[in-house]
Amino acid sequence: MTARIIDGKAFAARLRARVATQAAAFAEAAGRPAGLAVVLVGEDAASSVYVRSKGKATREAGMAGFEHRLSADVRQDELVALVERLNADPAVDGILVQLPLPAHLDADAVLLTIDPDKDVDGFHPVNAGRLATGLPGMVPCTPYGCLLLLQDELGDLSGLDAVVVGRSNIVGKPMAALLTAASCTVTIAHSRTRDLPGVIGRADIVVAAVGRANFVQGAWLKPGAVVIDVGINRIDSGLVGDVDFAAALPVAAAITPVPGGVGPMTIACLLRNTLVAAHRRAGLAFDEGRA
Ligand code: GUN
Image 1: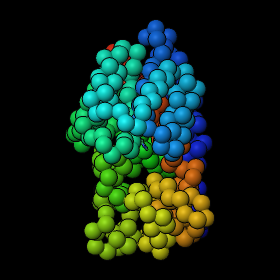
Image 2: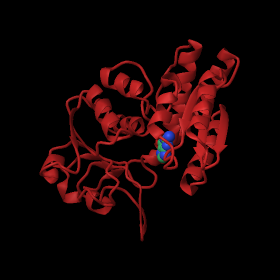
Image 3: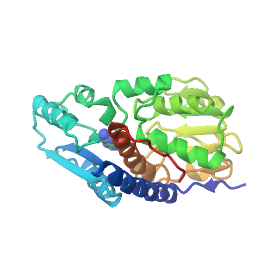
Image 4: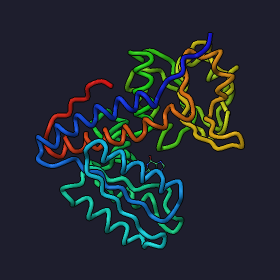
């Protein structure tokens, strides 16, 4: 057996095309385009690339993109004041403050300032609480993208055993909440987990988000498992995920590659979240449709 390679790039392109159609219908109904504001502090090269591609994708989807670039030595109160202005701006439906922030800034305090209904990253504790309790809110983009790929691959996930490797607030915890809501039996594994190979070996679904190159071994997987690799690690030979891809191929039923798997889904889901926020703020129904 060799695993099917899940084409996240193609899935994300279909999702973005659908979002563009929905964005045009929104602009027509609301009399204005949906708007996403992205805030970048400092000159970090990787963050700068992300922010530029987010802006480009926003415009390509027919939405308004507002880019705010602040100098690396901006004061906390200046950054908070900008977020408060964006909260109050009726043309802005979504606010994203690019992380990481320079060390002198308190990122948690900045994220707490974002209006939860404009928090398209889904990082605000109010949205984490909404997700945990099943209330409508903003769902973090990367785990939501992983869920869409899993549902596309497997259909109904109910009753399946899922292991999420990694317990971050950005991926691991919201991923576990989404899989629980989809009626999986969910285990969150992490650096202190005893017998990780044994835990992973029982899983129908493995989501790896630990940030360690080639960490999950092919021999740990249950034959026929579906593997979602969230990792992006730069090593001498190039970019690799958190799963030993070559070793997983003969064991898994399907696996996401790195690059070209989960990565492209994140921006597509950010655009989708912006549109969800725009519809809610305008009192319009959002039709999810299918990619
Ligand atoms: N930095 C890297 N990825 C992300 C993301 O998804 N959201 C934010 N706000 N910052 C990031």
